[in-house]
Image (cartoon, rainbow, N blue to C red; front, side, top):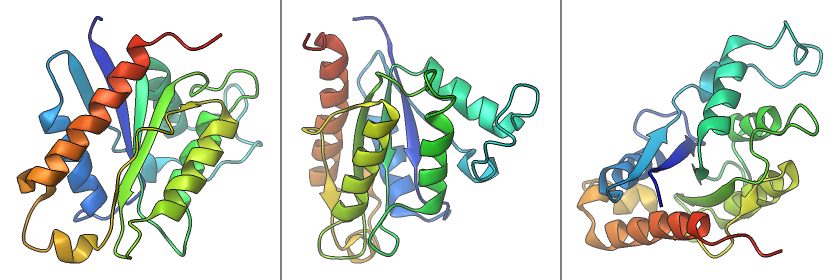
Length: 188
């Protein structure tokens, strides 16, 4: 397979986010020929509004985001859990990537959702809701490529995820799973 481009979306805007740290760790350990690019402009995209999603009025940040999604071979989404569900910035990204209707930039793209959260379940509710929403938007959800890391605030208080051998092995498996999905033709 030729080079693989994976766009990484992080649902936390905090500079010290453990999910952002996980995204950086994943990009550092990816195999040769696999490029993980963290999209850092989610906070610049205005809330989705059909009134501004018309030719000539689409905000530049939304156009940049859609172009990045379109250019990627696959997506990796990392999400914390906010009040038991998806952070608003990530839901907004889903809305922008799902439109215009019939021309979704995420349509047919393999997409994996992983993440960490402070609670004992590692944000699985947010991950499930993210998979559901991206699936409705047209992405090909990789249900078998998962990773939930509970107790992130404590686990990564003094250790960066890239220095945790167990996490590095899990992230390697996630990236390998995304690449495998691209190598395996979709079932007809």
